[in-house]
Image (cartoon, rainbow, N blue to C red; front, side, top):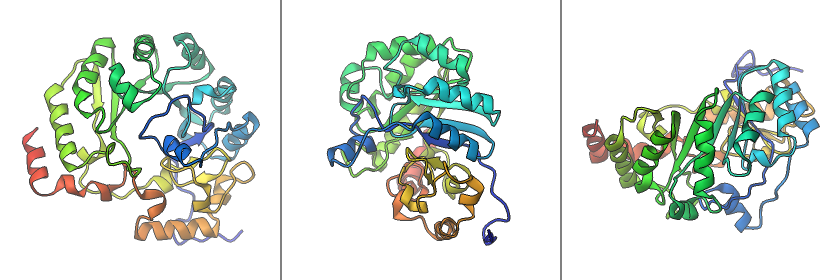
Length: 327
């Protein structure tokens, strides 16, 4: 195979990659792409078969970090323990992670996953107030979530509480952080809800200033290490996800990042039947990467909370001056 060296002479090192092992979920979160697409009758709930997951792991290069997640709840997958065991025994990864809502199983199930090789866990905690959860993460039971969090606080592996901030839970954020601090030691990752065309959900420039104020008002908290959203950490950056943080969708197809599971973007490159290196040097993939370097495409970058083009209003004019005064 002739390799186009316009971009790179070799495959770049992958920081992490995400494997979508299911598109099924028991929740109906209003700000989730899955909920939106289900409303349009444009979604099916599937599971990647175990043998297919194994082929993905076999055909991907060693990586510091693999994440089993996607637009579904991973603990619904009947073979999740086997998937984690296979990833662990492959010797390809330092970090093996799942992202979960933590609501389907008890704490002993997660302890079993740790025994299978799980060593990094992210759990969604947008609030611990039942009324707010009913509106923002429909189907979540606050008492069960808190019980699971108390058990996870004693885990020997890192546990990250992930908070997606929308208009619905923005003003509850200080209370959520205080409650987490009372429960135990966590790293808290905060991100903005993506733009799915739902103005009642996503934050605007004024909301971002309120978010900054909320964080400053409540921090520091002794048990929490808080990572703020991208809009508060950088002024401008170039997204490197298509080079260093790709995704594999439910069909086993390569995607540019975790924001999309659309395999057509890169030409339906099936990682269950080809190596990542061969997929990398496919001409269509190289052409797409060249175009990405020139300008972020509408698909998949539109609405992505990691897209730097969406942050500019926060870093200019009176908003930026106000944010600087909060420190």
